[in-house]
Image (cartoon, rainbow, N blue to C red; front, side, top):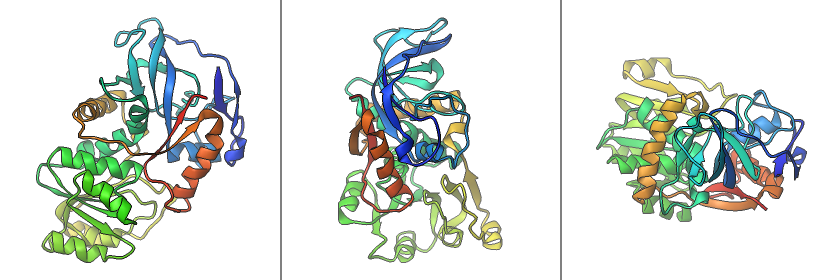
Length: 332
């Protein structure tokens, strides 16, 4: 089979494209003919060596996939040949990734694609959708009518937070850097969209919340400003952080505890298969009901994986702002 792969860590140039053996599903696994995969920042961290995880060699990158099952291993109970499926959590903890024509995946990490949902959309929603759901509902336990703020409403996770929060009846405040992005967020139902380049984010939040602050602050930035977060979160509010592996920002211990605040940090891939399946059930329902739309910014071939990694790093690390939506890869 054709696949993108690498044998050593480094820059995007270490990624090769060529022929690798087609995997054989083991017990509990199915073989998926991959129709689409999506790229996430974690893929670039693993490739660069900044996140050290066990990897087979040659290693196929990619966490997310969508496609059709062409073979089932012994003991598989939830799926059969011909089923359309999507999933995440591949390319981690020694598992091979998804930037290939075929991927052997344990059935625990797969979910059915609802009728009417395209494979590219299902692949694009995977990691970011599950990440957003875990933070909103397992951690923050967002409730109807509560006010949530999320940084970067058109980012991978941010776009999911905006739409999922609206799906359960919350009020959403988010930031963007352009009018084009603002229109997208308003189309998804965001109640207040603030252009951080031209407007005062702090004053806008204070005015909208009547000076009380938000119930939930969902932080997607790599270097969080805890002073601002604590100031703008109301009594007994919840803070959620998901990024910034190397970050060591100052923390306002006193203001934090006197407001009875709670801080949640988590990594999606630490969640159990059962926890992630609960997320996927809601995601599938919202996809089918058209309450969840997945912005796709660029589509590359697997043979262009290095180029895709460069674009992801430009936006994640260099903050160029040239990407709106997810990067999706498809077979050549």
